[in-house]
Length: 410
Image 1 (cartoon, rainbow, N blue to C red):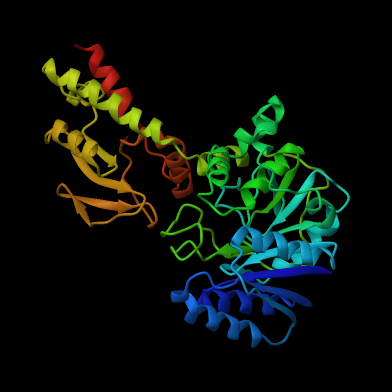
Image 2 (cartoon, helix red, strand yellow; image 1 turned 180 degrees about the vertical axis):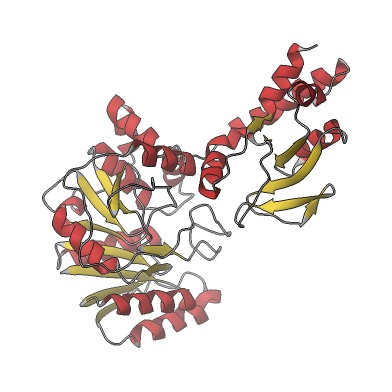
């Protein structure tokens, strides 16, 4: 039997939705851990959550309300330790993760299928929005990168886990493990440093390093069997609205789930995941802007503009990705010689920019088949993922390459 551990704090509406999804899945036993109050201003919501979990029916619940504030990571570590004293398999469910109706069935199938394969270190209920090839035959895939969304594992895997500050050093010292870490995502190293400095309260980052250090894999469902509804800015580590990892809650209950017998890695899935989670370093972003401005000023001083590129390649219309200063420089440089059909952004703040429409990448888009001038080229990997997700196959022009071309003409 799976031991389900629900971790709650001060979000009553989120918690209510999560509890409703737990009931629909028919779990036999649930352990609820509410962290202690940290700030007096949160007391009202904290007490609402306490009352809510105490009123939960249709399920056997064991409720633990802490008298002191432990923080998210410590709460989960201690709570899972407690549950694993009573269960061989356990799930850590945070108060902002809603379960699809087929979640329990999928988890039971995966726990049974991979119980005796020590390379499988965890079963995750939801992923990150990775694009899976249309003809992919299974309900799950194997990943180098874990997801803490409705995360589950076995007692014997959990017993070897520690939030070891030397884990990153151990991984980086081994070429194979280092390569696996890079495939898991460049942000894990950055989050590890932030955790060491005490800037983020995390257990999942350490679990990622633990998995890589033992050369293990995570199981991620193709469909969304669990969805994080807490990226609305109300979370402990998420303080503003994030769309980047949004997924649909579309995991259906099945009589039989299609699970591969052996671990294998789909290169297309790994590639797209890596692009999706790739976070440019601040210094890379700064360097990109400086390089662009230096090149542009050199062209200006010699009486040139980027119009030369568009003229030479016969480009008369273009979309521009971005609405910042450099986008405005590009628009001014094109100076009505090239028709700007609109501006693309990940989250728009305005309907129009410089007399053209702004298109939000979260919307359903029907773009004309004309080139897209990409300004934030430092983030081209993530933007490429967005284009694949939206089915955008337009020619992409990188501003840096355009400037290099124009410099050669001087």
